[in-house]
Length: 95
Image 1 (spheres, helix red, strand yellow):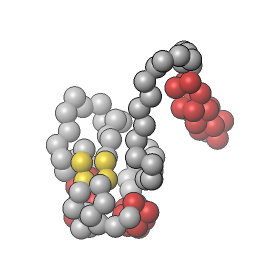
Image 2: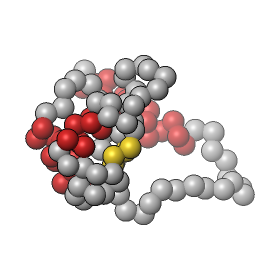
Image 3: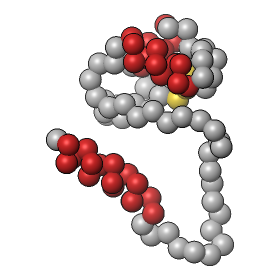
Image 4: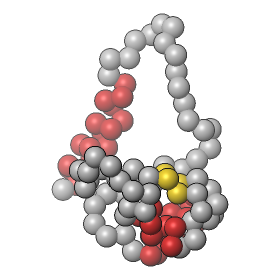
């Protein structure tokens, strides 16, 4: 299991670099400051959700939830962790 996790992390870092060429390609970047929290599978308890809010910067900071494991084509704005984070007081959550 540990080997699988390491392989996934390795691929997540390396694959975006494959096929890149030098030249006049336009680069796009996100904000200079922010936190990326990746959580996968299983139930997330209230303590972890509280840590997400604290690490993100508080209840009003933008939080984006990207669900993928369920396999649906569309998700409502209260799906999964988004709804739980809102119930905990987060005001700027997007799915």
